[in-house]
Image (cartoon, rainbow, N blue to C red):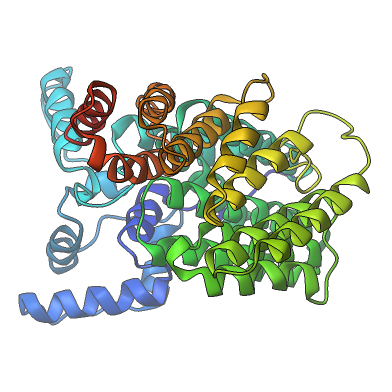
Amino acid sequence: MPVPEHAFANWRLVAARVERGWHTQEDFTAAYDDTARELGEQARISVRQVRRWESGESTWPNRDARRVLEEMFGCPLEDLGFRRPARPTGRRPDGSEEKLEERDVRRRTFLGLADAAPVLDLDALDHLTAAAHGARRYDEGELLGHLRTALDDAARADGLAGPHEALPTVLGILAAINSAARTTAPGLRRELLVLGARGAELAAWLHHDAGAPAPSVAYWHHQAKEWATLTGDGAMHAYVLLRQAQATDRTDAARMLDLARAATTGPWTLPPRPRAEAFQQQARALALTGARIEEVARTLDQAHTALGQAAPPSGPASCTGPLGDGYTNQRLMAQSAICYREAGQSERAVSLFGEHLATAAFAPRDRAFFTAQYSGALVAAGEPDEAAGAAMEALALAAGTRFGQVLAELHRTAADLAPYAHRPAAREFRQRLGDLAVT
């Protein structure tokens, strides 16, 4: 049976609302009413009205509502998925000039997100709408497979081209899951929400890597845990706790440690690979809190023990496959080097990075991130020229894709290299990183 037309949302309005920080329809209704009062408009809206706008029933709002919506989003209503009523006309122009003007307006003002991250431009919107509306072609029996494939493709796109490329598609997939789950049979609904938890966790990561505000990241982590709880997927709930720990700023090491410990000690069982990663994250948090190096090392030993219990991967790692299947010994060793760097054991960190980054085990994003960490360890070890060289290598991998975590680490290295700014290698790296920040 085909999925009902009304089960698919107005993706443009959904994306605009979420990116503005109005994560629920209730949030949006309250913001709308506040704006209406500021404009002196009497009309108010209900959550039911928002639901209609975000469904396939995106009818043209009345004059008062148009004024409020344009004030809230700073863009034409057509950019929010509303369709202007057709007007009779005696001529049929090809509309080419109007289309060019519309594209130009969208490039400059799309969703009013110039100061937000990530920015969804016109091409990104095309990806979002294609991911969501493409699901209409599938019967219920085929829908899950289509969405699973689309989510895996989006995750791979992130690894190759960065979060700004993948995020619109992931938001479209999540909107499709959320809408379809309301009208489908219970069995398929559960499977959709299981997949939705994976997608929501990926959306949290993409927002984090793109530099979005913390509440946006937290919203998607919360959504992932909610769906994992509804479906009884305890391992996924624990995995999201791990990912929250990884997204926690290093200046809040106590929270990082609490989250990582909860992933391994709560009423759930993580599979061996993500369990190993959770122990490694605990070790990093311990190092940041100033724990003794022996405790850091013991926790890393727990990570190695857990990883040793893992069965060999049955195939290539994917977003929708077994949790943490991409976590390998090489990755654990590189992350162990980060732990030793945080613990002030810079020479040991440099040795581990040098040994394991010499392999071809890492994809471009991971290589860039670990190389950026390596550059910081080299500065601490008193090797500023080598540090600048490693930082330049990481920058070359991350500049075009804007891998956010890589660039954050490179800014940290740049700060560490400030005392060596007179040296040619350090000066060149700091200049190139500064040039990137203004492009």
